[in-house]
Length: 373
Image (cartoon, rainbow, N blue to C red):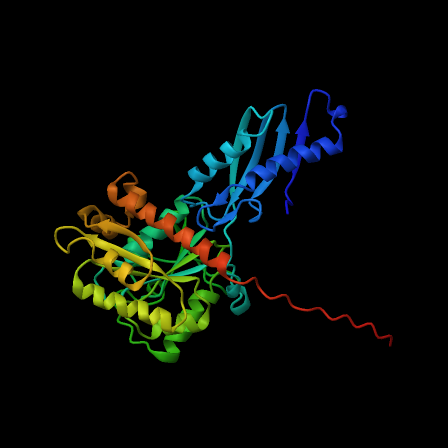
């Protein structure tokens, strides 16, 4: 059912009856009902993605509200929507505008009081595969596309997110909450801000659980579309604590292409599955002559999960990470940056798909006390 706005203009607006207005709008909406959102596999009208229909002497305009500003299918939707409406009699021109409204994982608000719509965990079966580099560039790429993004560095063994984003300290707390600094449009919180540089953290069990909870709830986050969580490598207490604290929208595994890394990646996927975290897919990092090409894609096919993309090994990524300059920000036209951007679009699409498949949040029944005292 169409719930958006529409406006009809003509040379003599007084002559246009309400019935004519409704007929014109119904024809446009019927045409758009033939256009499917390519990944959600439902039409734009059923998904309530069409707003503000305007008809003015042969010119039709309307707004399509995407489920993410990083929508990888935007061009296809625009082309198909325009073509569908141009088939209508009397329509000479069609203007398709876009807005975005990221869908929320409604389970999060029921578990934690945080202004975060979606939480995406980035993990690896072992260290040394470039997991943090991927997490940082993924967060910055989503922010560049217009999303509101934060990154939580929960890697207690190597909290390197601040260094990779050129940060060294937090602002002063406000209202008894930590204030996350911002870099490249991304809000940042890290265990690295809370301990002296170079100090080893030997946290397990309740201590680690409490620390992760504080980094989620005792922070003055803005209203975020996505929180990217950089987990420690392996399948230890941090993964368990995070999954117990808050529903994770999905998990991503980062691996290098060689066989030994892929075996560990499979263990990481198994850990997500046992914790009932949806596996969004595998990212193959550091591909090229040194580690090979294609192993991550083959593992994704074997395990029946999505292959989110491949990043080729390049010295500029390492240099940028050391200098606090993410590849997508400082070399946005490089092959590696374009690969990170493509991964970000696929991740955003996976989030939209997962949220569309989840049941709506249960409605809390309201009981009225009608007794008279």
